[in-house]
Image 1 (cartoon, rainbow, N blue to C red):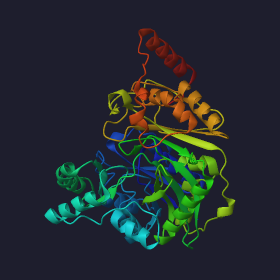
Image 2 (image 1 turned 135 degrees about the horizontal axis):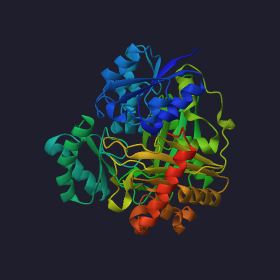
Image 3 (image 1 turned 135 degrees about the vertical axis):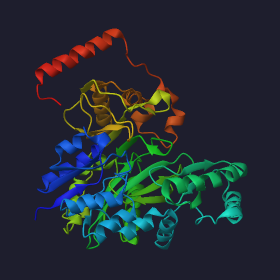
Image 4 (image 1 turned 30 degrees about the vertical axis):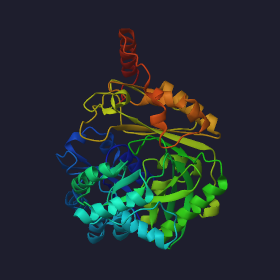
Length: 480
């Protein structure tokens, strides 16, 4: 039966979900705050609901979104990622309102969102983990436990917010003095960011590879994996480049990681799509990090190498279907790379470029090229949201072919107005280590040459772009 599904998100992920809803023959309902009044997702949706002036406050309001869903006869809600996607209270509110939440149940989100509880679940299932503490007790007792952990496992250690996610609430601790200084600060920041001041410690795995596994499960308990991804190229624990499958050459190791991911998901009674994340050390030992209880930004690379539409599958599972494919049906082909093209200046500490208007927009295309974005020529980038403009994902049957395709796409990509991460990624694809598939989480620190580039801002270049823009508008009367 045709359902009405609300997308509780914005930007490129909202567009991605809306397309899947419409392909399935359902009705897509978008929500938006005032700063998003010109956003593409509300033009593409079947219905669009203004939920307030924001910014961000209404996108984050469970009460506001549930009220909008009820008023518009919504059957289900897809949270996307960010905002409320990993908030168990949102999932619970949907359930209590009789609205299907497209994701796992609220108790699973709650338990896996608490990293200490998640570690306990994994320990009972004999999932390999980095040594760590429980939640540190408050006050002097917590400091005592922390210092004892540092003495036992040696520095560096990682101080983490229990309720953290997306790279937030994490800090590297090098010695006792730093621990004494940072522990109370971390508690305060965790309380402000997550309304939970619990923190814990983990032993640091130095310069690891960050490997994750896409899992998906139906309500009958069938759980399978869709292979690995490598997300090692990061900045301050935030992913910049996503690759599938992992470039680790030992296929037996990757198979064991995938099998462990499935065991971890089953141990947590997981349902719908999720990602099990691991660290792999220099000796190729692997350790469980966490389970992300939502669709990931980087889901596109998995879709490219498997042919499985993850969002479509999420929706079907939430509406009561079982998995229509088995583990044996999953065939990994080739390689895929995703880069996040942000309105940021990499040479200025990735400073956001919100408030700028896109004066010229020319995107690449061709075989094996996918664009997930919401930017268009004439669009003014809101200053109050994430700076992601578009995700560029490329596929190739070999690693070299994939890198070559990415280079060609970046070279042909033109976005003028804001500074973007495109020239940074061009340097990356031309780097010898990247071309060899040799990288870990220290890649940016050990490759400062990635930031050494010049953007052409000459008068001649500006005139050429202006002429191109005028020509484009004349020949594309109906272009947005």
